[in-house]
Length: 426
Ligand code: AMP
Ligand code: GLY
Image (tube, rainbow, N blue to C red; front, side, top):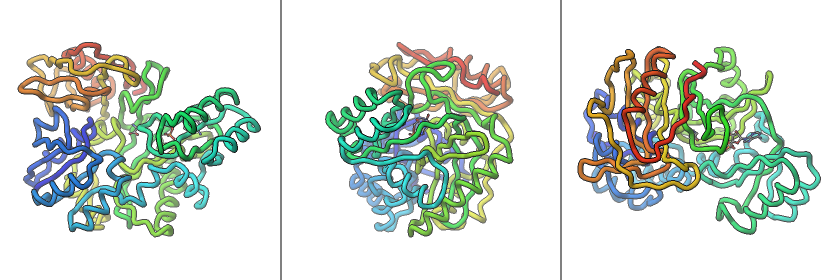
């Protein structure tokens, strides 16, 4: 079976690993992929936003199944285009992807279907937005409505700061068209949780719970990033909470989507804030989270290709989604300076005894090294992005923390940075 995976991060390397493990024999292509996916399959130099290029490639090479990692191709309608051309593709269509690509759309959707979310107003005009921040208590949360690679959210302490942020979005256009509309929300405190389910538009199945470490610094300090690490299961989530999330967030959302005439097929990722008994939706993503997916997929026992096909063919209810009983951890090794400016092109040196996946280390943990921002030139690997590598392991709590940090020490590149406290909560 010929499989095309779109994207170039650690998430896509983990998907490629899981696909390779399938009992179905595969030929794997990644567009554009990274240094790690090149060791699993064949990298194809087509960018994730070049929908026509990807479609031409898939048709010409008779790709049997395409799996979309990131949100950009989904928001550009890759699923609609591939489906119209008779190709099988995993990921929601353009209309469904609005849940992520338009915060205004998703907030209006949540309000319409009585799903709890922070109070908000949306604006496409600087004056009206300025008036609002002048007349409302702070802190307030100011968000570019469109896609902004996780950088479009500001928590503002007073009206002065809010006005500066609004000017940078509306006048300086720091997010381009993604900032044409701005959503201003009430600030919520509580504990944050990401929750993912898979659905074929008829039934749904939750993935195992995970926790994402979003901030750059230890103890969750400093700037927001794409994610500096993840663990499964999320130690703060009880069975009771899972049931409440399913009943109060997931099921009404899936019902709402049906009522909107949207057949949602793929992963639905809800970013939640839990405050006492209340569960608020902060955002939806229409794809697997990164790096949560790396920690989740190393625990997947059932066949991922069959999972993708059961969603596309709308028989998910007959698919047995099975994870093992381990704990798992994913540590991000980043380029120093990330999430702001950083340099790339440094050689990555791996200890010669390290292998990329599936080995038991001396701590008794099974470990996996996934590539994110890397590229391979000849036999060398070079840094090629902010988040460079993911060191993952599964086993029992404390042992995997030790395994991951031991392995991280055996990988070297200039300006390597990682948080030192990933997994402390086990
Ligand atoms: P979003 O991309 O909308 O999930 O926002 C990114 C991050 O900003 C979230 O993970 C939260 O940490 C924070 N955030 C977003 N909305 C709110 C809110 N209404 N109240 C407090 N924090 C928020
Ligand atoms: N780790 C958060 C995300 O994938 O959006």
